[in-house]
Length: 116
Image (cartoon, rainbow, N blue to C red; front, top):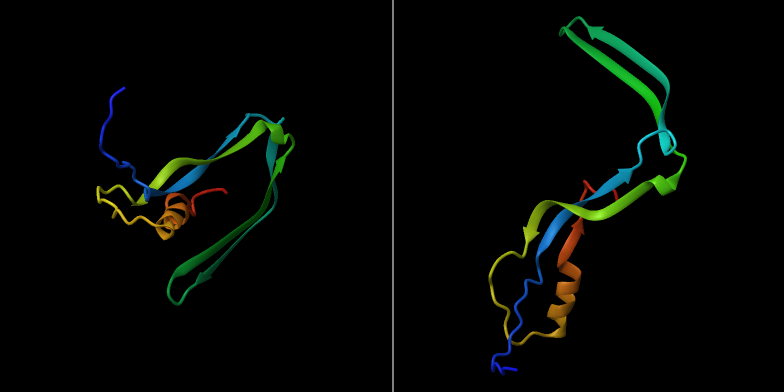
């Protein structure tokens, strides 16, 4: 064994990203279906400013028959970097407030693109 008289920890505690989820499914109707119900299309015109307005409405529902064929995996794709990849050093007076900030502010964040 070799004694090294240096006492430091090398880490990046505030590396923070927006991440998205992944849905993995078995293909086929044994897993589920997407049912499309009533459909309605309406179109109107305004002769004064020569514009056409269209409105399409449909009712749809996803039906899952066997939920064992579906797996939702969170925190898979990194969508955006937020902070924490720098090389700044932390002061030696590292207290409990700093550790609480690492736990609350660091890590993976939920994204508006995420399913969870």
